[in-house]
Length: 121
Length: 107
Image 1 (cartoon, rainbow over the protein chains, first blue to last red):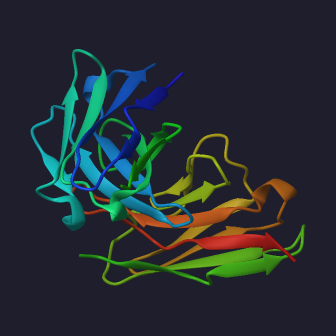
Image 2: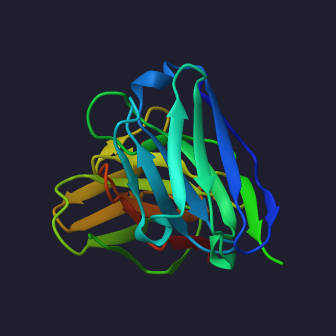
């Protein structure tokens, strides 16, 4: 069974930093590209970042470029999101998600339960 | 950057009726479109990908159609468990994007 479990969320002041982790199990992690997607309270879904299977390509939404870094450790079956210079508008539930299938272009088909990040003084 | 726009924002439907949700892309995205269902307090659930392919275990009352810039999600006969928010997403590696969502509520 595919499982994605996020951790590392919490309350952080504006300008602060936080590192989210996503522990993956139940599949061959190194074969899938992964995503972070966020959802501000009462709002819709917003894609944040993608990383391909071997970690050599990374993509970000414009609003987080230069502040957030997506990374992965395939030996530890883990995905990360390093968030710096946090702003109140980064407040959201952050989801870790896995591509539906490993080969070809597919949307995220498996999602974690989400972790809340609150940026406030 | 491709923007996807959903309509309507809210759809009021009686149980057993048909619901039709629309998603329009600002430029052609071929068939790289997915539909998700999200209930309060839950993660999104993928229903449809490649515009019309149902994910395993998704009921046949959910169907997707379209290509290029115009897409539709149809729920043929709404069940109580189908009342939720639905999102479309165009997907690629470098700049995927979600629509703003359509809330399907009980009439």
